Length: 290
Image (cartoon, rainbow, N blue to C red; front, side, top):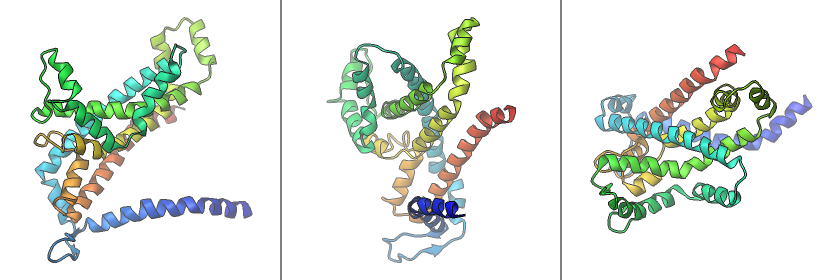
């Protein structure tokens, strides 16, 4: 009994911080989502409007379009980061000249704030001074993300891959380092090739770490705001108006706090559903077989 009290006592600071910065803000946003509230209007009072904000977003073409491009962005970014991150993790598991230097350079984007990342890519993609349009001109490609919706979308995906692939790499390196050597040695003795070893030994053993990494990146990608807002501002048109950017523009320029809160709650719900679907399709069947 005494040990349980001590355990709760030691957990109490963490629970307090979680409640203050996690649970309380969520409850407040949920409450605001059932109101019409513009704090800068002539009448700054919150007006309870039941589920009017949620009914509105179901028929909001701009929100639905932003949700569509967000899901496309998340798919291409997260899948690319996982594939590239695994390849780099395998490469960094081997010894080669300059390994420590390359690992350091590879990790540098992680320490940069998203707004800085957006600023760097803004400079690199500006047609008049950017190095990327200059290099692409040598191949006859005229890159202008302010005019081409496809180019703007692709550049935001590449920027996200550049920024967050190091996180995936570090997570998978940790998973690969912890794997026992015996199953791999036995598979090689039995004559298994690299593809068979990957599908039947490596992938099942790193699956929990891989899924956890995908969850982290999926949740981060769903709420991308800073770097995209800095790079494209959500344009051209609505090509890169991801839900995070859409919420920002609803809450700050339009000061529509109630509707913005409703969108935030729905996006959180969709993120949880997507993660749950991934879990049930990839982890739960394996647990049942075990």
